[in-house]
Image 1 (cartoon, helix red, strand yellow):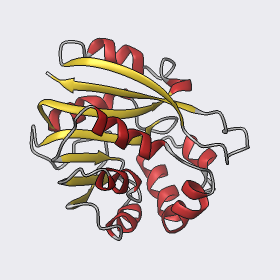
Image 2 (image 1 turned 90 degrees about the vertical axis):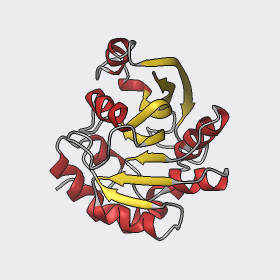
Image 3 (image 1 turned 180 degrees about the vertical axis):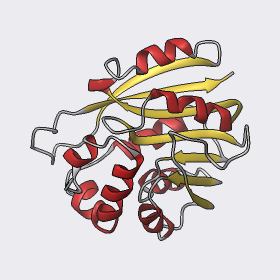
Image 4 (image 1 turned 60 degrees about the vertical axis):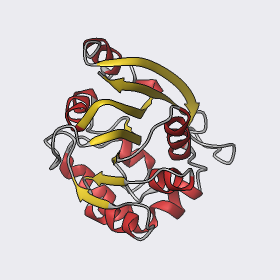
Length: 207
């Protein structure tokens, strides 16, 4: 059985795998992972969104327990919605009182969202070793309005190997202003093999 921990998350292959792991992990995720490992990526994504003058309505993709939502609200961003494949994780996010709407959604399929509904799209920790790959960008661009700001973290180690670099190349006609910022995922309190893990924060607009 896959353990509800970082290595287990990196081993995910299917939506069903994600539902099981995050269902088991939801109640302890903030304490056993985010706090214990110095997980600072959600704050980095929120700060990048605000620096680029992002505004709501914004969709937090792979919202999990709401860590990006908390950071966005603290920075003054309003009209935040969140989606995640795990209802258990969304239940934890709902208790943080930073989202207007929360709904279940699988990025490998179609979200229950109208075309062009959001002026901003953010995501921290979703595009990594798990089952969600770069093809999900097509769905994110569908729900983004023209000119919408997208700020998405992508695990740096797998940026090219999993096809993210090629996907951005293919999307050149649909996006503009792409900038990639590299950032450390965890602070100095993490000392295991993942201590030096980094992510690329992709900042761009939909044309």
